[in-house]
Amino acid sequence: MALPELGPEQRQAALLKATEARRIRAELKQMLKSGEVSISQVLDRAASADALAKMKVSDVIEAMPAYGPVRARRLMEHLDIAPTRRLRGLGSRQRQALLATFESDS
Image (cartoon, rainbow, N blue to C red; front, side):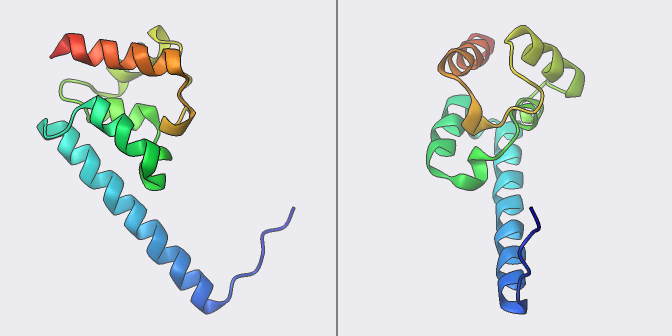
């Protein structure tokens, strides 16, 4: 299926929307890193914010203090979360396991 051709106004609107989504995700990751928000707050926000719902779970875990790519990957394997899973796509069992992991770390 071919992508539709966008006019200049549509292209500009799409670029602005993408820029705003990247800004929102970057702010959230910084807030996670500094401890301003918890993982449960992120999951709650993702339910209503499309830009956050499209974040990869691995990006969120890597933004947590003391977690890097390797530790995040190991945790996701342990919790049976696919590396490409997005916040919106988490099942209830995966969501509960993720919350339990980070609540016990606190």
